[in-house]
Image 1 (cartoon, helix red, strand yellow):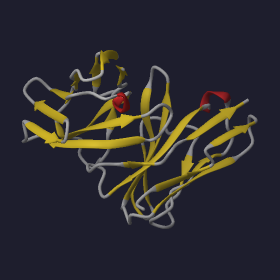
Image 2 (spheres, chains in turn red, brown; image 1 turned 120 degrees about the vertical axis):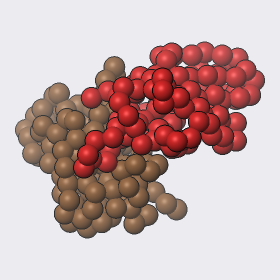
Image 3 (cartoon, each protein chain N blue to C red; image 1 turned 60 degrees about the vertical axis):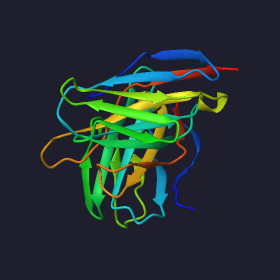
Amino acid sequence: SQQGEEDPQALSIQEGENATMNCSYKTSINNLQWYRQNSGRGLVHLILIRSNEREKHSGRLRVTLDTSKKSSSLLITASRAADTASYFCATDPVIQGAQKLVFGQGTRLTINP
Amino acid sequence: EAQVTQNPRYLITVTGKKLTVTCSQNMNHEYMSWYRQDPGLGLRQIYYSMNVEVTDKGDVPEGYKVSRKEKRNFPLILESPSPNQTSLYFCASSWTGLSGYTFGSGTRLTVV
């Protein structure tokens, strides 16, 4: 079951610009996580934001969470060519007895030099 | 180095020939999980394990088996592979199912 949906599906920007990706989800969550995947490789955990948090920073990453709208955004500032990758949000729906992450289909980000 | 190791990285096999994809983690994580990734469908969970001898189905368990006899290992078994199991497979581990996951590098499986 797909819980999170990223928007846009693809994003292409110039190096140095900021990139914003959005994630919407359907059910109550414990937390929301963002991951990066370079082409065909394993996903790398970027940041986790808990349901009682509204904003979190990590280096050039800024994540916001609006539980009333069931949405999150990932902002990458001062983008670099190395940021080219797919970005996924993952949520853990509040389901009794289950602990699992459900991933969206990702946003493919291309940084042009 | 903390890591999740999957083997093999690439595998081409024929329909019906049993295979095992191994997964091992060195972080003493209790939670381990298998996902498959397909174009247009994203990552879908196959099976997960919350601890030794504790496994449960994910969203797409049909055609797969798992076992968790030791904390560090979580092999994925395809008893009779079919072409619709051609996919990119990832093993992941974490302290709990709700904390950040560490992923393996993936196994690209082709069933002909």
